Image (tube, rainbow, N blue to C red; front, side, top):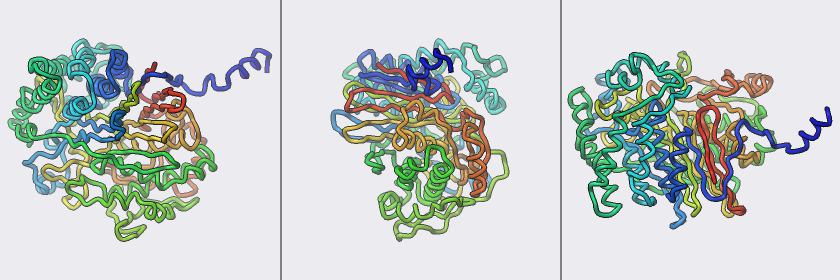
Length: 586
C-alpha cells in the first residue's frame, strides 16, 4: 500500500460505510419514501411547524409523488409520541367495508375471490387520519401542510425510474379504466423517466379541501372540520358515491359521511430494554412485536451479522409469528384477539423453543394457542402456489422528529392500478379490501363495518434516557421483516441508521400472502445477492428454499429510520437506496 493510500485509510475508517451519508442534525429531521415528500415535510419544519405538521405534509405529498403506490384516498396508519403528554398513540387510518357488503358475497358471486375493481373498495381513510393528527397534535392548517402536495400535483414533478417502471409494468391494468389511463398513460403510453408528470384533478381536489377550510372562517378546529367534510360529505364524497352507484360499487354517501378513524393506545413489548410500539391487530404491527419477542438479541449478536445462524433464527421467528398472524390477527372489533397472551413472556418462551438450530420448518409452522398455554395448534395454511412470486407494489413511509421531541411515524398506502380513479377527482377510493379474505371463517374475513388486516404498520422504539427511533417501510408482507432486520442491525449490531438500512436482507415467503389471491410459497427464503453464496448454501442445507434477489432489490423494502440520541440531543437518519427514499435534518 502506498503512503498516500495509508494516509487515506487512517484518515477516517468510516468515511464510506454506506452508499449515502448518515443524515445528522440537532434540531429536527425527516426521512420519507421520496425525496420530494421529504422536502415538503422539511419545509414545514423549517417554517415553524412541528413533527405532526411535517409528517402530514410529507404523507399527503407521498400520495402525489408515489401515486402509483400511495393514494390520497387510501390508507394512512399513524403512530406518534406527544412531547406535551408523554404518551404514544395510534391513529388507525384504515377504512371499513361498506354497509352493503355481505360476508358471503365473494364466495356466492365471485368463486371465493375478491375481484379487481370497485368491489374491493373500503372507505377512504387517509384524509381523516391526516386531519385527525393535525387536530390532536398539529399547529398548522390543512391548507398550509397540503401546499407542497398541491404544488407537486398541479405543476407536476419529474418522473423517476421506480414509478415509471411500475406504471409500465401495470399498463394493461391502468388501461382498463379511461380515468386511470388519462392520468397514467398520457397519449396512450406510460410516462418515461425524465418526463414532467402532472395530476391536475388531484391538485384541484386537495385545493378544494383547502378552500373549504379557508371559507369556514372561525378557528383552526372549524377549518380542519370543514376540510374533512369537503372530502367525506362534500363534492369529493358525492363524486365517489355517484360513481359507485352508477358502476356496481357498494360504497355510499352514508358510508363516507359516518366514517371516522380510531384513535387508540399502541401495542408494546420490551426488547433488550427497548420499548417497541406498534399499531393494533387491525394491522400486522403485533406480528412485528411477536417476532421481536422470539429472538434473543444478545445471542443474535454473538452469531454474527447475517451469518447463517442469525438469518435462520430470524427467519424461523418470523415464520412462527406469521403462523399466529394467520390464526389470530384481525379487526379486534370483530375478532377476539388474545393480544396480552400472544405478547406474554410465557408464550414467547414456548414459541421460541420451536426454533430449531440447523433445521427449518419446511412450510408454515403450526400456530399457537396462548389462551390454553399451548405452543402449537392446528392452522389452516391454504394451498401452496406454483405461480411466480409477485412482489408487493404498494406503500411508502415517513417519520419526523422535531425540536420539542414530538415524533411522527406513518405508512400511507394504496395503489392506483387495481381500482378506478374516480373521474374528476384524480384519486382512487381505497382498494385495501384486497387484504381481506372471502372465507367468512377467516380472521380477516369480509363483513360490513370490518377493517381488512392491513400490512402497513409504522413503528416506534424508545429506550428511556438513550434514544427514540421511529421506523418503517413499504413492502407488503416484507415490511415487518425489513423492520425487524433494521431494528436488529441498530440495537444488536450497533450500526448507524444508514448502514442498518443498507445492509443486505432476506425475506421468508412461507405463509399465505396478505394480498388477494393470498398465494402461499412453503419454505421459500429470498436472499439479496450481497449475502455470501456459501451462507445461502448452508441455509439451503438446513431446509430453506433459497432463492436470490439482485444485490439491491426494491422488493426487499425501503426502510426509513430516525434515531434521536437523547444524551447528545442529536438526530441521525437512514434512507433506503433501494427506492427513492431520502432524509433531511438540521
